[in-house]
Length: 309
Image (cartoon, rainbow, N blue to C red; front, side, top):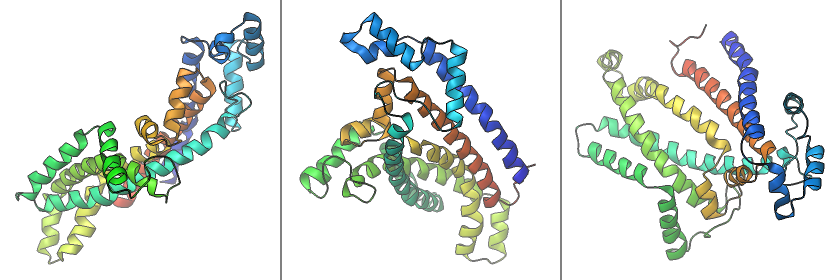
């Protein structure tokens, strides 16, 4: 296992280098001039040349890219074009932390309800609860988040007055309830359906019938044999969910006034703030690589028969 992990980690720098090269190239040769965005209506050719000199935008492409990569290797993603004098890391770190907390709350809701519900539905196959639960899951998954947020705010904020209507107060603040519900409920529906399908597949295996024939209790069969094996395909979904925890829905942040990374990233794209865009891409790529590695490692713990060479 250690050799496999080391081999996977060796690929990380090459993957990040490829992602950075593509993003850096698109940023430099794509449409739009960040200097024009910085100056706005005050654009002057002399001032533009001075800013390009300060930012190093007039240097050869290879020099610019090499300078950026060298700085990124040392944890320096440069300074923001839009927020002059502010480093990209100082801008992103607090917003990523906010987005992580929001996604963590939504993931807790999705896992805490979706997995047990899907496991229970699979054991009720052939009864009315099975098709009813699947139908409800499809309805919940089809409701857009821009519809569910106003509906939840109308009920919990305007009618019941149990939570504030917007803003941000941290993970344990009452205002976390709305994003946790609106982002977590679609995940509940998806995980419940996936867990149901995975559990039904395991229930039909020969080793489950053998375990029951040996006289094992229903709890032992469910916990040691059915649930563990049903979790194998779920781990892949969880890996992508973990990687996505560094970002938040743009719609959620806009409606609820959450100072996360989603709104900031969209603004950076429109403002041609390429250092911020580069940092977001690299951090996202690294998160997905690490999440996939954790998923592969988790497979071997869930099912001892899985071995990596």
